Each structure stands twice: as C-alpha cells, then as structure tokens.
Length: 251
Ligand code: SF4
Image 1 (tube, rainbow, N blue to C red):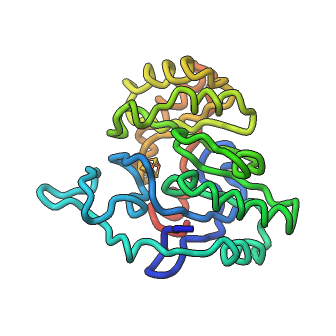
Image 2 (image 1 turned 180 degrees about the vertical axis):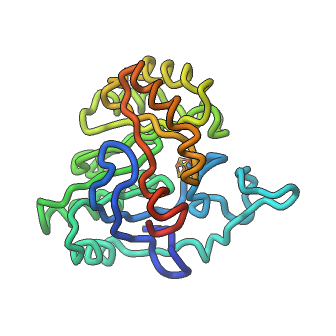
C-alpha cells in the first residue's frame, strides 16, 4: 500500500482527535494514503499528489515556480501485513483511512480491514473519500463509516471528474455515509444546495466546513457559514486540528 510520510521513509500514521465532521473530537488513529484522483487548488495535503513532473496547479505555487513534491521522498510502500500489525498494536480502535484518496487502493484496503476485524471486532473503520469512487468488495462490506467530501467548483477540478452522480447517489442511500462540503464564499451556497438536492443527500447527514488552513481564515468564514447551516438544516463543522496544531503533518 502506498502511504504518505511524515518524513522520508516514515508512514504518516498518527493518534489524534478527529478534527472535522460527525466524529469531531473522537480519539482516532489516522493512516494517510498517498495519491489522489482529484487535484484541489486549496488541498492541505498536496504532498500526496502534486509531484514533480505533473502540471497540476495549486494555491501554494509561486509565479513561474510551482510548488512540487518529490514522489520518492513523499511516499512509502507498506505491506498489508505490516500495516495491520502496526494498527493492531495501537490501543485506539477507531481507525481513519484518509488521504489523498484511500479508495484508489481499495483492494488492499479491504484485505487490511478484514485482517483488523478478524483480530478484534471492536475496530471501527472510517474512510475519508472525495465521493468520486464507489467502494466495492470487502472495502464496501466492512467499512463502518464513510466521510464523503464532494468538491465544489472552487476546488479547480472539472465537474466531470469531481462529481459522479451514480457514486454520490450510492453514498446518499447508504446510512453509513455522511457528507462534508468545504465552503469558501457565501456565493458557494447555491452550488451546495443544488448538489445536496440533486444527489439526494439527507440534509441531516450534511456538514458544511469553512475552507482555511489557519485559525484566522476559519474564523473569518464561520459566522456566515453557521447561519447558512441553521437556515438550511445542515450541520456545521470547524477544523479542530487547525486550532490545536496548525496546518502540520501527523496531527
Ligand atoms: S480530494 Fe482531498 S486529498 Fe484529493 S486533492 Fe482534493 S482535498 Fe486533496
């Protein structure tokens, strides 16, 4: 399995509080997968996909000097068995597979989750996905919770790539799935309403989250976003980890 790293050769596996969405505040073990099929201009984990030799655009690019990451230095391959052993030795049983996009590696992920559940049925498995890939096989059966984060136009991804109506309808119909939508400006809200309505997402399973990588950016958007949530019946989520630790790896 190809994982992101906290430093060369060290997989990004860490124990922290979930910072966002329905499980915010819960102690969890995070495993960050490398690689993503989307390329959001404001992504805070661009080191999982914005590698040298690609032409993707990111907000951190300087004029004439795109900020690119060394693929070899930013990734590490770990076997299913090694990762399973590493997770089994943790005392925390809430495991969050995040990325990047973990479902790009869902065949191995399904085998890994099967090993974890066979060892201890108390393992609780969350997947953070961008909602453009449907889970299949073991990965679909054994996952306890999907944290689905479909992207709006301000992410910079073409609609045909980021929005797959059949995939979003699948998650909307699955009570294990909740939705977290990143909002940057009040003008994004019409797009949110259209996406929720056309996909059949129950508003009670939708969380709106301000875009931001600093406490100041988050605070500047929280007041009007909270009021929009109240009006529409959505949930609001902050980004707890940003307030606690800043925009840092392994937190
Ligand atoms: S889908 Fe998530 S990991 Fe992928 S580029 Fe967008 S924000 Fe980053």
